[in-house]
Length: 113
Length: 109
Image 1 (tube, helix red, strand yellow):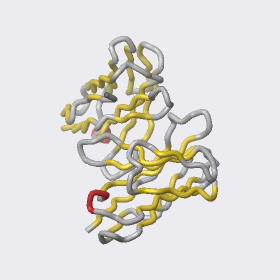
Image 2 (tube, each protein chain N blue to C red):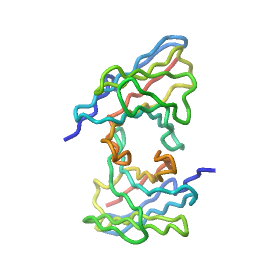
Image 3 (cartoon, rainbow over the protein chains, first blue to last red):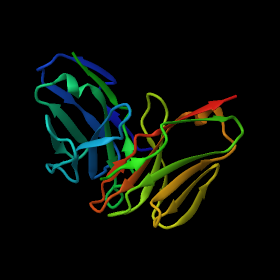
Image 4 (spheres, rainbow over the protein chains, first blue to last red):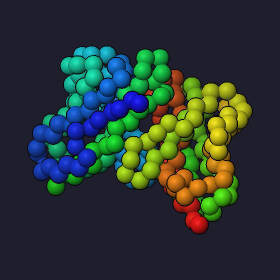
């Protein structure tokens, strides 16, 4: 089974802190994605990557950056956390040619105080 | 816009059938997806429709009408474990998924 692992299930940070959310997948997938999920809204794409060292902005990249130094790892960085970044963050991966078959991690519930 | 509309919440009885509807913008359409998400867990893939018609997969079926911008997910012989949110998503012309807010399905004994 494909496994997508997010390093933290719950995280509490203070406004202005730099926050790293880590995601690792074990199925050699080329495509990786970061979404945020908020009540009453659909999943919103923050950033995605189709290859190592490659990154593309999604629909809501402001306030975030990403890093993909290795194929299996895709990190989401909040340079200076703000309260409006309190959310559930979901990482996902998919194989080449099948961007629709997303495998999600269990999510990180981030609270920024 | 890129709106995808689905009901916020539905309630059904164990053993019954329920249909969850989804409407979407038809321009730039490349497929329609359904995912299941149990509370506190990751979404998991259920179905993918790119052509009109009904796709059956066990107790779950998904229907698509491209001309009407309409899909539904049909769940038969409902079980308590089917209590979850069901997410509708369409793939756009850039092969990215645009997600609905999800339908919370509550199953009662």
